[in-house]
Length: 98
Image 1 (spheres, rainbow, N blue to C red):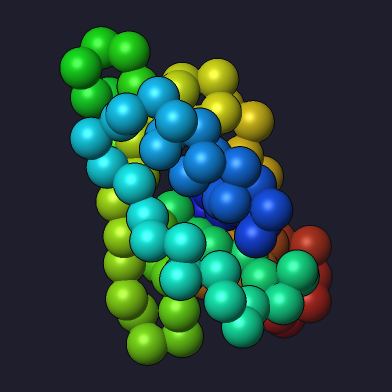
Image 2: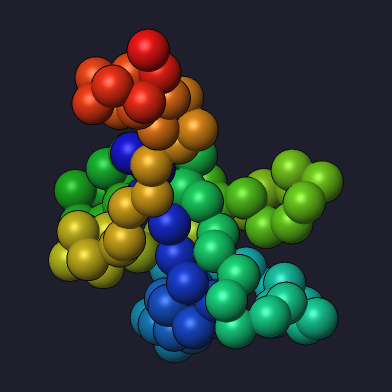
């Protein structure tokens, strides 16, 4: 499973990061031209300063990434999506791949 931000969730998390002077924030330009249904996958996450999580987020179809510092509670509430490899394995287990 891969954690993902919705467009609105990423925008809110970024605004909090800006207002609370966190070390890593995103340019607000990231959101221009993106549909409200856009999902932004988290490709890396690790504890930072014992009070937050630093996440690497894919920002576009070209693989551009950005770093954002978010509270642990925000990270814990992110949605999850299944990767294609996980879907294939699941299909195999339930008989669709036989």
